[in-house]
Image 1 (spheres, one colour):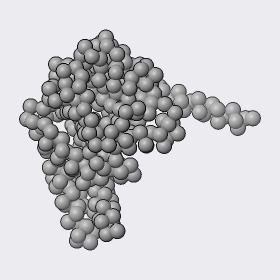
Image 2 (cartoon, rainbow, N blue to C red):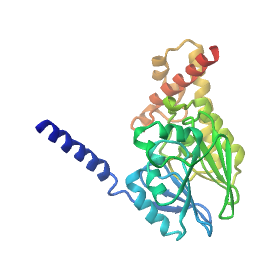
Image 3 (cartoon, rainbow, N blue to C red):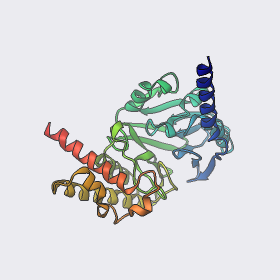
Image 4 (cartoon, rainbow, N blue to C red):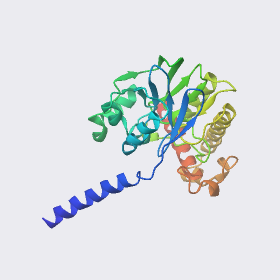
Length: 297
């Protein structure tokens, strides 16, 4: 009995801690264009389009923040949140799905996002996308052609870029990090790849122009020039690591070769980052070698 009581108390304490870490999170609302906003709090950047036809939303952070996010949106629009697009399945971008679904919002995502959420016990019961697409989709709302396009095996296997044509604003999801988020997170276990992330940036750069404002998955609003630098960095890292592999370097040797990434950020600079220089080189090595193995088979 004592053991069961201890386990129960531990579970309660864990849940309270999980909830408690969001208590002091403030949702900030930043105008990006005339009717496009970026919301930040804890987790991925949220994009919001407002207008007479309702609210169109991109990503929703964590479930405990849903009420705060809804309150923040009500300050800029009295219209309902009609659509919510998940740029991918990670919980810091889709954690509030069930809450928004319960309030009448229709959830949209790539086919693989629904598959991954449906296969996870925690997210299978509610908040699954009810509209999915395999390649592209377009919404016509609030004076914008909202173009959504899938980018293959980039950050994950279900990533989407969302472009507001008339407002000239692009939301990249986690296929692009900016600012203090220096190196990207390539989720190899969820279908991500370095080559795919390069192609995602290339596709995004083809869609936009020099005046486009970019909402990255994490970090401040960026420009096309910022995005181009990110693309070029990934291309160079891919080239450097590929050359090291051709020279017969092992994974651990590649990870130890700071010179492969130091032209951009040193290991000292990124030591406390979510993705350090060492993690970046390891991910690059594993991504490149796994693709080579697939090609041989």
